[in-house]
Length: 344
Image 1 (cartoon, rainbow, N blue to C red):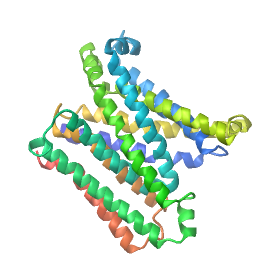
Image 2 (tube, rainbow, N blue to C red):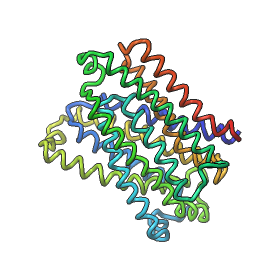
Image 3 (cartoon, one colour):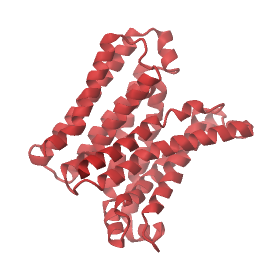
Image 4 (cartoon, rainbow, N blue to C red):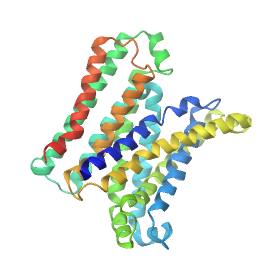
């Protein structure tokens, strides 16, 4: 029963993340780098900080925890900086491929690397016992995501240039594919950052931190690193493209509109990791479900992002074959999510 509760919580967070790109469509008169930076303030600093503070025991500050943790803090931040490259290119993959296909390819790569690399670094045997279940589960997830990617290729083939641009304004398949794959590989560093912060999590347990929220301070360290990368890039793009004026020439109404929707996008984005931390607390420590939880989150993100893709008519005009392939891929993803539980 606990496992089911954990999966439901992770799914709710995933639904939030998959919805986070919808508010961005409501942002007015700002360049990409402007709204990406502002939503990043909320997604990677404000809400993760609030989440981290909720986890702290009475009388304990974040500085106390960080000072006691020593180099583990910098490891998590360092992985966060690498993840920031993935987060940055992740946003670009949405720009060139749309919500459905962009998230599918990026998150598929992220799922594989983010799940298997920590297991390999721990010295787990991936060819027997729980390690084999983990490997098979990830393989099923990758297969489902690959099928969805194929559906995206069919979609591109069957649509005219005018239809592509109508569905996704800046649609560019080859550029989008390369960016999405890079985004996936680098985004896997988020889970590596969480693994590097395991001693911090253990320390918080000893101090009496809220068990449901104990991962939040580690999440905050990783997102700090991600914000550094994204802020540097966005400010450079502001300088290069002369878009600093977007911040200063926007009217009060535009600022308020954009701030509200950036905050909403940031909150929805952060909900995936808040949900991951709470959901993991319902899994048995060291279990295959705990190890597979990252892949579950990524698979759910793909599932829900494609639901949004359908709602936003990104698959409109794709043809019956394409839709059948898409639905088949989504079905395989659902199987991958329940597979570890079935093998218990």
